[in-house]
Length: 238
Image (tube, rainbow, N blue to C red):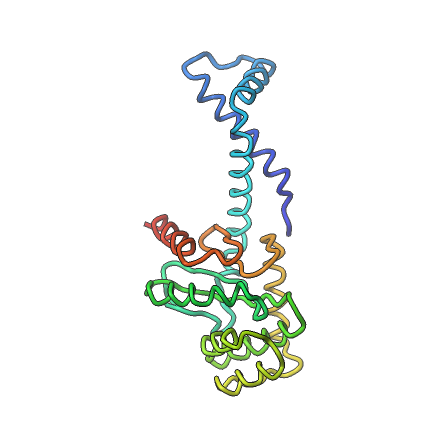
């Protein structure tokens, strides 16, 4: 369920400002009543207005982290074989993607490099076909590939095409030995619906979107940012 980010941000802002005031007041005597506290908070904000955007940014970051943690199990559980890298890796990178997305295509090399460089990285791929009717057709073939154990071959070959047409999808299916999905597949329907619900829960608005730990990185952020997020998550795990 979508969260009220404005309310979360406001509450966190008040908390952050209050914390700043307390630090500023030490070792002075703490206010003895609400009016004195409000006056102190007001004076501190007026003297340090830069804390407002900082607090709002931190509040949003915290809200995102809460949303990710609440959906962690669903996010990191792949559909059949829609997983790359080390299936038992100590850090999981989740990618929401669309085969018609040029930015997703540009990110393939970054993800492949991460997998090659990091033997303990696990990558979970989640189809999020939102750009065109052919996106969904390709997504269903991708899910068929995941069931058949040909996911990574299909995934890379589909993006190598540079476009998404019925003919391209059929060619990639044939080249990778991926069974063509039936017109009605309850498993595919369930997975696509699940991914849409997860995307809504996380407030995702486009592709690609990457999740590492409790962070969301939107867009083709590149190898360096993804690696930094992975390294930070691994460091948190000790």
